[in-house]
Image (cartoon, rainbow, N blue to C red):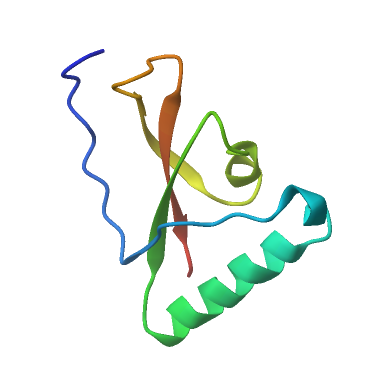
Length: 91
């Protein structure tokens, strides 16, 4: 898939880095952080936001929590790793 054309994705904002220490997962900390981020974005007038993740992360969270999977592409250094782009509507 080298040289594959990437999709154009429209969004108002972007979540660039997000993680919760493994020792504190499953306590809704991530959900509270996401909610605070989304509340801030709405206050700023944003309608959508995007984030990027990969198969080494818990991308299934986004599949199950209202995000639209809009693009995927292999890591150019390790094609076993897929990168995913998600967009979430805030309205």
